[in-house]
Length: 362
Image 1 (cartoon, rainbow, N blue to C red):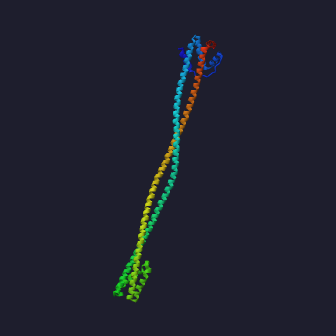
Image 2: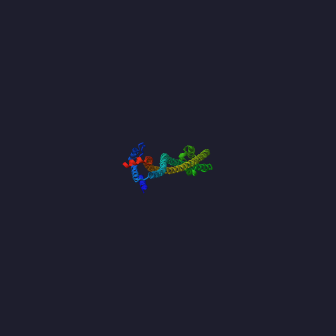
Image 3: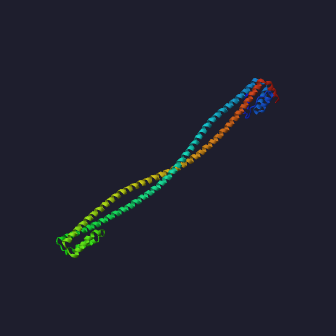
């Protein structure tokens, strides 16, 4: 029972210190006695000496105390190693988290900045594309109006030529009737209608003027074969010229129609391409805006997580430093306690009489 009480008292102590050895036994014991741990042990030894406990049993008790100190230190060493392993793992995980969140912040920041730059260019492109579409539509409308005007003019010119040719043909028939012996009085009504129609043809005044003049003279000076032949030749030449002019105008109309067909097809295809590009740019712009928004959200998320990880690492490092300081302090205390035990064992083994005298006077 005394052994157990001694061990319990010794292990419960919390303060101790290392001391140099002294040659004088009483001075050395006084030094030990000044130590709280040494004081308790000396009090226990005093009780055993007064009870005349053999020195070897006192040494056995001191051995037990030393074993308890060693056991306590071994347990604390194990706890310290376990704590160090856990700390290393936790701090490593937190450092990895910090590196990961920093990397994600950098990646998403670059993604956001690059996409913002690309978005600006996309917005420039879509504005240009909208302008190109408007220009395309303006060109189409303008050129279509030009083509419609060209066609209307061709229709009008062709109709005017046909009217003149019809009048020329009627005049040729009238001249033929006169050549076959019909009197002027018989064809006067027809003559007047033809003369009026030819005179009202503003488009062909220049080429019709000779035949108009000849017809007028025919009515004024009377019918003669020479005049009829001359008029017939004029009518034939004018008709040939009109037919050639009509053919030229048809050729021009067909060329203009073909040109418009090709150009309108080009404008239509270009319009379709521009509209498709505008649609693609709209999709791209929305995707870029979504990417920027997502990147900002991820930056915010990883920034918060980074702050949490940094704070957690600081806390675990502070905890580890405190635990390590406590471990080192307690290890130093146990080392001091063990030294007290060792020195007392030396006194009990080699200087029992002096030890007995010292404790008796305490």
